[in-house]
Amino acid sequence: MTIIKISPPLTEDMVLNLRIGQQVLISGKIYTGRDAAHKRLVELIEKGEPLPVDFTGQIIYYVGPSPAKPGQVIGAAGPTTAGRMDTYTPKILEQGLKGMIGKGKRSQEVIESMKINKAVYFAAIGGAAALISKCIKKAEVVAYPELGPEAIYQLEVEDFPAIVVNDAYGGDLYTEGTKQYALD
Figure 1 (cartoon, rainbow, N blue to C red):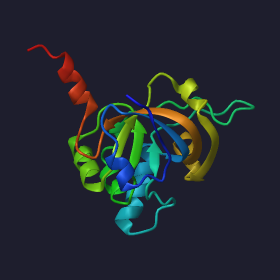
Figure 2: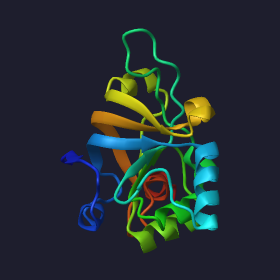
Figure 3: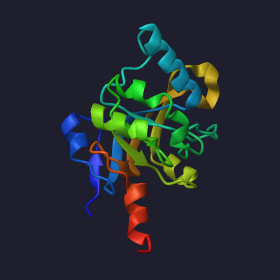
Figure 4: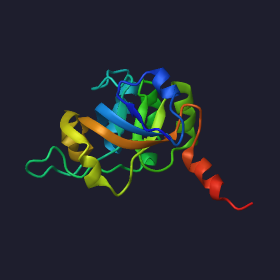
């Protein structure tokens, strides 16, 4: 399978061309966010207040990077378990978010929301935090600095490797992959 290179902001057409199992290399600006930041974002949405970042067409990487050593842009930056964000994800997808990067399965509610909002979920390789951090060329906190590693960062990435796990059609690589090895 050919590896597709993508750069946010993602359009609906770009998302609709991605299918489960597709390998991608992401270059450009992406955002980070974990549980605490997601909770704050949803609180703002429910109050009708503006978000600190316009997520239209953007990708959020679920990561809490470790501190950078001298001379580094960022410390280890491996993916966080995506299910921790499932409670908040549908409301953020409604704000125009088009992609998420993490590890592990998503809830059925999130998968349905991805179909409705034409979004995609990518898996990054777990246990490869130091390797992934080499794809990050710049890191800047853009919201909630008081949250430390859970702040929202804008990252500039180059050829960040990921795999489409859930596509905008309801496809689920974890489900389909398991079927290939099931005994009849």
